[in-house]
Image (cartoon, helix red, strand yellow):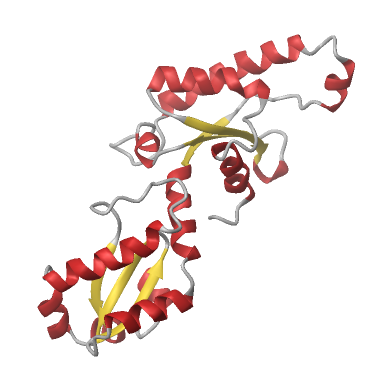
Length: 231
């Protein structure tokens, strides 16, 4: 989520405020060249702070890049690619530690990277940046937008993650507006507002989540509960 420290540190790299760790630069370049992707950050830590369970987060820029590391048959990470990157990680960090061996200050304060039993996993920056942009739209702006629309059949505008849903009151009204010119106009209104907060230009008008639904469906099938609806 946008509040996560890993996202915040990666955002600074994307904004050119900071850089990926020096020792990870060769690995990021290797990943990009081998798999045809854009790696923004590499983050090494331990699962549950257990030294026996090291892990490496490969933070890619785009959601489509993350898809290149998924196994379409199992919907898990591609084990072959995980192993390839783990092996390269061991090579790169070993070279780095040999390089700094003579620098006792770096040796004392530097991190010794454990590559045995390394778990490699993949995330993408784009998806979280889209959530952040959507969350930056204030409730005041949403109320102003609904007032501007000024349609008595529109119950509420509900945002979640990187998308938005406009709720009509009844299923019959939903059918009336679905795929209508009004539907397209509402989508364009929201897109224009969303782009004001789209710092990295990730949202495209034809490819963002904009849906219509009804209060009738919300009440009847989700017990009027937002948690159940978005679960």
